[in-house]
Length: 305
Image (tube, rainbow, N blue to C red; front, side):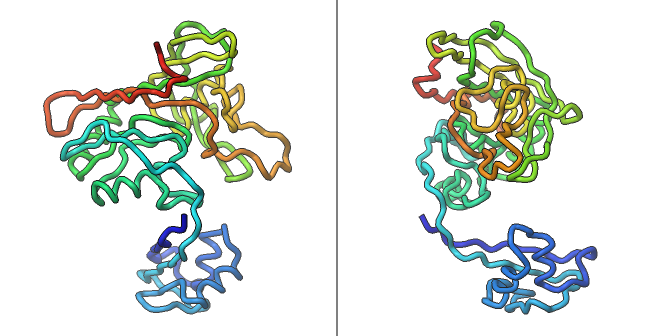
């Protein structure tokens, strides 16, 4: 699917004064070389204060730059999602595995954010994130007041999120808690990924065995997370020695897999292949004096019954 392209704005700060347009882009957006940026600017893909820019123009504080990225082919992704709860303030949606929540990498219109705004309007924003391979319930707000109140509730840990996961092994205790801190660690592509890090941010996952599958050497787990760090469940279960079945990135110890220093095909954080489902979410409704709990039925392989 080819998208419609995108405009990336920048405003020049005092610290950015002095260099040329091409130097600014080469320094701030290193995914492309200076020569590539020069070609884009000459082709009219960059505007400065509302007019076509020249590569060697000098920037001053307050200047406005816009990079007009041309349409590109996005990777395929499922575009169907369900609505589990809807009113004027919030949406709880059923996200399919394989659909990114936010734009990133090559994804722009094949994202849940884009699709939700197409259906429900530009005021919708996700309160939290789910990994591309994670399915299930995700909470969106529909206005600024709801976003403000639910963001406070999230920080105060008044929002309950319960997941189902298919983990490797069957020897874990019936219940256990993982409190390994999480933070960025060096990687190859991208330069950092989130993983176990001794001086990372505090993170807690409460785990309960739902069903052991000895013939598959796997276990269905219920995981409740008071905190919500990136890839937290994947990291915590691998840290505990029970990584998600099929997880291409994390290995025992909560660290990224490394097949070799020169492995240019190392797994990316957004790659899929594991089974993780956002099963239940409970939140204080921003306009009612009550909690709302929403359940998203899991895929059959993760069924608790």
